[in-house]
Length: 90
Image 1 (cartoon, one colour):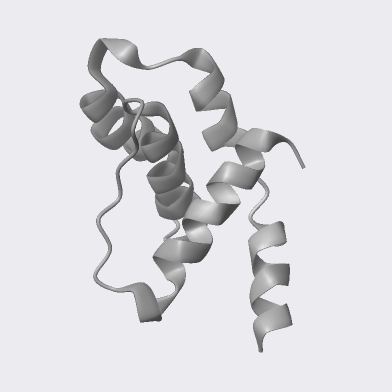
Image 2: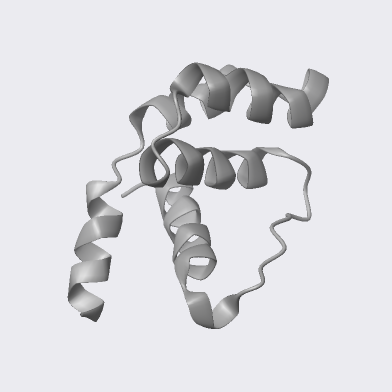
């Protein structure tokens, strides 16, 4: 797993763990990590359409700072890894 995928997985683990609720999602560096984590949550776990995630969420909040590589992460992130993690917890 790449470091980006690990960051996203770490974020999704925290967000989806009800013991941590309520959760405020943010990052130190700007909008990329936060946008990717929330985008993967919306797209893969909440079944949002990719176009809605990209246009209404990611690009809106990232503004001029959005990057093509971030969009590729949203398109290709493998949520199966997260499901395997949840199975392990049960």
